[in-house]
Length: 188
Image (cartoon, rainbow, N blue to C red; front, side, top):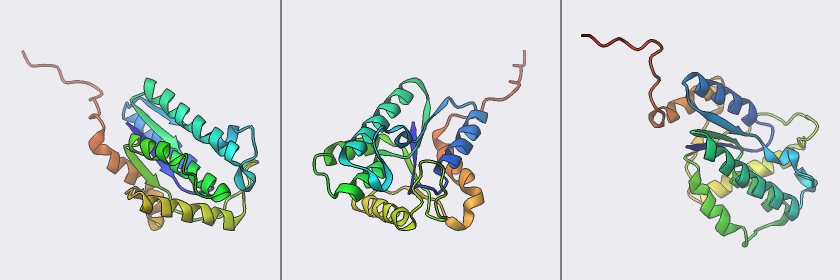
C-alpha cells in the first residue's frame, strides 16, 4: 500500500509523515517513508528550477517509491509525482511528454492526503519562502487534482491537531488488525 502527503512547500507534510510512520509502527505495520527527493537535486530548484531539475526530481521520486514498495508493506511518501509535477508546470508550462507517465503513475497511490496551505514557509536552507510562489504551487495542485478528478483526503485546517488521527481513520479499514500483545491460550 502506498500513501502520499501532497501540498505546497512549508505546510507540515514532513512532520505529518513522521507522525504517521510512528503511529503505524506502533500498530506493527512494516512502513517505509519516502523523503522529499527535491532536497537532493543537484540542480537549482524552487523558483529557479528547470525542466531538467524537475525531470531529475520526478524520476528520483518514482525510483524511491518503487524501491520502498519492493521491501515494505506500506509506503508513506512526503510528496507525490503530482505535486512535483506542479513545480514543473509552474516553471515551464504544460508538458505533454510527461502527461502519460504522470497519468499512469497516479493510480499507484492508494491514498492521497492534501495538506492545506495554512502558514508561511520558513527558511530551512532549501525551502523557498516567497508567499506568492507557495500559493501558486498550492493553486496549481488544486487545479491538477480537479482536472484529473482525483479525490484526496482533504485535511481540514480547523482540525490541524487531529490530522494524524484523521489519516489513520481513513487507513484503518486497509490495515491488518493489531495482534494481541499476549495471545490468549487455547482452552483444552
